[in-house]
Structures are given as C-alpha cells and as structure tokens.
Image 1 (cartoon, rainbow, N blue to C red):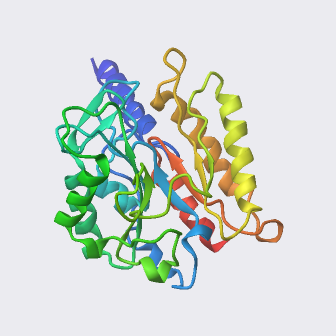
Image 2 (cartoon, one colour):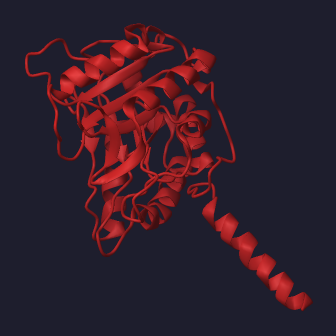
Length: 298
C-alpha cells in the first residue's frame, strides 16, 4: 500500500513539474514575475530595439488541442513580463469577440482592453504592443471592422492608445497601448498604429511538418534580428502547428527549450548590433520570458 501511494505521488509531482519548466508552462500561474521590467530602461530607447516577450494567439484558451495556445490568464502574462499580444477579433453582429480560427474564446476585445488598462494603471512604466487582427468570417454586421474597433477604443478612452504610424520611443509610449494594425482602414480614417507587417521583419512559419526545420527558421531570424537595422522591428514566432504531427503545445515543448538555450549561450555584446527583438511563443515558461527581458541588458 505504501509503495502504491508513493508511486502515485511521484507520478503526480512529475506530471506537475513537467507542465511547468523554465521554458514551457502549461499551468495557470507563472513561477516568476517581473511586472515592472520596463521601468529599468531609459526613455530614449526606441521600441524597435527592445527584446520583448510575446504570446501567439494570446487569448486562445479553448477549442481543443489544436486551438489552445496559452494557459496563463492575461493579467498573469503581463505580470510574467509579456508585452506583445496577438489579439484575434471576429467581426460578429457589430461586436468583436475573440476567436482562434473557428473557436470562440469566451471573451471579447473590450474585456482584453479593460484588463490591459487595469494593468497599465497599476504599472504606468510599461507599454503594451498589441497586434489586432480580424479573424475568421464576418457575420451579420452593419458596419466595417474599422468602425467597430473605433467604437471600442472610444469606449475605453482614446488617451490609452498611442496613435503613430511608426514605433515610438519607450518614453513616448509608457503607460499606453501601441496597436499594430493588421486590418485595413480603407480610407475610413487614420490608422490606429503602425501597420502590421508594414516594414517589420517577421518570421512566422506556423505550418510545421518538422520541428528541426521550424527551429532552424527561428534561430535564423533571431540571428537576423541581432544584426539588423536598429530602427526596424523584428518579430520571431516560435509557435506553430500541424493538424496531424504537432499541436501548439507539443511543438512548444520542443521549440521553447531551444530558444532558452539559445538566449543563454548564443548572444554576446561584441558580435551583434541590437537585441533579439520580439519573441512570440505558445505556453512560454517564466524563465524563458525573463531571459528575453534580460537580453535588453546584454
């Protein structure tokens, strides 16, 4: 009986630990938090030069193994140090619910922004880069996606958003959301923020049939970022899936540890021009997030 109980405890403990490692986390709460890390950086730094942890499909918590990409709630992502969000809104009856493909994520754009404003109110030194993308098929709308986004931003308060056609400095953006606009204005009004992708350098090889090939592309683009133009933003998606071979979770378990190892061993101040840029992940571990943040001081 004793041996059976100990075996059950061992299985339980190893299962939990396996779900929360330095590079990968499937649990609900990060093991390490750094909610004010931008406060230690000077105002003069352009956002384009910063190493910034990000999450792919930030609000994708539901829909099964091929749809789920994160396990930390938005506030926990912020507390862990995540500062780039990938927000996917479906235009549905003039509202903006959050979707990942066909999967509704049980929240909406207003709630995402409300939670973001709450965080920025408590941590005014921080900024949030937010890619906003129209997702899936529009349904029974009487206005454009642009007009619905305009209404939501007006409800939240325009002063929370820095409207600029290019990435500002950290000082200019503190306490605000910078929208990376991944939808068309169609001549309806000014852009909400820098166009996505615009002039950004982006690696987003999300259809993955071989994790070694995926890692080679991630590593290539991290190297490109470190030797790239400091005035240009570099975004590297470490995420991906395959309908048969990889779920977002199973791929993250393979790619995230390689990213952590790369950051710990393959960056040095004498051989690069700038940081690794924005690193975007599924199920990141808190130590991996922190290692990206620390790249700002290498």
